[in-house]
Structure formats: C-alpha cells, structure tokens
Amino acid sequence: MAVTGSSDMSVKTVAIVGCGIGRSHIVEGYLPHADKFKVVAICDLNGERLQAVGDEFGIERRTTSFAELLADETIDIIDICTPPGVHLEQVVAALAAGKHVVCEKPLTGSLAAVDTIMAAEKAAKGVLMPIFQYRYGDGIQKAKRIIDAGIAGKAYTASVETFWLRKPEYYAVPWRGKWATELGGVLVTHALHLHDMMMHLMGPAARVFGRVATRVNDIEVEDCASVSLLMESGAFVSLSCTLGSQEQLSRLRLHFENVTFESSHEPYTPGKDPWKIIAANDDIREKINRVIADWQPVAPRFTTQMGQFHAFLSGQGPLPVTTVDARRALELVTAIYQSSDSGAEVPLPVGPDSPKYADWRARTR
Image 1 (cartoon, rainbow, N blue to C red):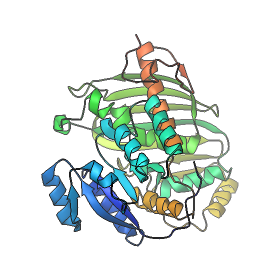
Image 2 (cartoon, one colour):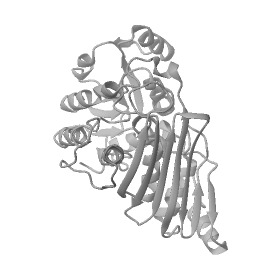
Image 3 (cartoon, one colour):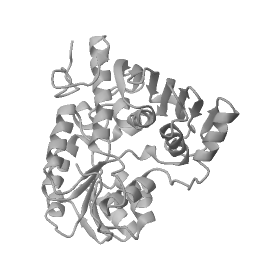
C-alpha cells in the first residue's frame, strides 16, 4: 500500500452510508474541513433518519441503495458507518468500485476477514482508512511526540480502563448485543478505542491472557473483560473493561523509565488534554518542554483524522490509520477471546492456525 496519496488538492466528494455515527462524521469530520470535503449523498435503510440528517445538513441526495452509490463515478469516498456485520461485504465492494473507503470500527469480525480486505485493498485503485478517532487530541499527541523523541525511555507498565455504562435500552437496537451483527461486545465495540491508543503509544503486544464474561446485561456478547499483556518491549499492561460502571471514564496510565503519562478521564474524548505528564527529574522536564515548545493544537477525534486523510489523498502526508493498525487491534481481540475460551496464554502473532482466525465467535473448548 502506498505511503502517500496523489498530489490532487481538490475537494473530495463523500457519500455517508449509515446516518447514526455517520452524523458525527459529518459534524466533526467533514464540516470542519468544508474546503477539503463535500458530503454529496447519504444512504440509510431508516427513512426517517435519512430524511432528518439530509434536512439538517442540506444534503439533497438521499438513497437506500448502496449499489447506487458504488456506481456513481462522481463520488470519491464511501464512508461506511453501518452495523459491523456488513462491513466486510461493503468495504470489499466499495474498493472494487474504485472508491476510497472510510470504515467505522470494528473493521470486520475476524482476522481472516481482515486479510480478505487487505488483499482487496492491495488490488484496488482506492485506499481504505479505518476509523480510530480516539488517537487525536493534544494529550495523546504530546505523549506520542515525547515517546517518539526517545525521552520516555524504557516502558515499564501500563493500565487501561474502559469503564462505561450501557443499559438495556442501548441494546433495544436490534443489531446490538448479538454475535451475528455486532460481532462482539465491550472488547469490539467500546474498549477497542483505548486498546488501540495504548498500542499506538507502547507498541504491539507479544503474549495475551484474558477473561471475558457477560455480567451486566442480558445479551449474547461480553460486557466485562480483564486482560494481562506482555508487550514486545517487555512491559506489562493490564486492560480492564466493563459496561456496568456507574461513573463513565476512560483512562490510560503509562509508566516509562523517565516519565509517567495519565490521560484525561473523559469517556469519549480521552485523547484531549488535560493529560498528566510527570517527568522523572528537572532534566527530563526540560527535554520535554523543548520537544513540545512549538506545539500547535490538535483537534480531537474525527476532525484531525479526516484532515490528515485529505492530506494523504493530496500527497501531503501518511495515511493516518491503516488496515495494518486495524488488524493489530483485532488480533488483540482474537487473542483475548482465544485465551478466555482455552484458559491459556496466547502468543502473538495470531495466524491461520488459530482456532479463532476464521471466526473469533467459534468456541475453542
């Protein structure tokens, strides 16, 4: 896959497929970059929602036909915001149609399916950008710059907490809470964001031991998880997730040789400041201050991810999130499910020999 896009700086036309989270893509991702993107069409099977979003943003073209959008040569980007169970089919079709593709998480429901998508992308004219909007904001980006500059030093330990609340009314939406359509629970739909943030800062995992359970709601998929990781760096990381927390928060606390980072606790914007950046001594603090002395504000979530996507398409920078990133996040999910089922630690990478490679919903004991 190419590292940079073309040199075309033109406004890119976008079709949104799925007007639930798709509305947030419009508000946070495309409207702040009106000089870079134009949403020209929306697609949804819910006619009432389709009309409401179209009216709100003055989008004239409204359709229930995904195929109609694929056939339209005037559309540059298909932005897929549909339930996870149909992502694979829609991503592959959009790539085959020659479109650039944006896809909400989870990208798909197995490593085999991710590899199918990666093969389709390799042969396609367009490029796929998975969504990991929690990577963006001043807090996480400052931490990333400090770590990449070599100031943080050796990674020691980290804890990642996804403590959210989902009640029965959340699962009244027919596709939620079911293996066939949501593809997983807290690990796939909620904590995936924070786990990606952790690996974005600390690198990949090497070994995984996890437990999952359904304790909060009467659903098929898991809503609690506890995981222990050995990272490739040698650091230890604990992941804790629940959808039964009476106070919602998202928190990362990362301990390095020379600095400790702690994220903000905002459940849905943990990348924003304030982050704690605790230096080991005055010398380290001075190095950190020099590295971030020219800091320019980083808008959170979709605003920065979409801006960087346009920069990539215009040949001005790297693709901000890649299918490799999505695969790494879903590989971790696969290993956790495999460990929970088997009661054993799972080494990474997870390949076709894994009982969960083709479908992590398959039982292994």
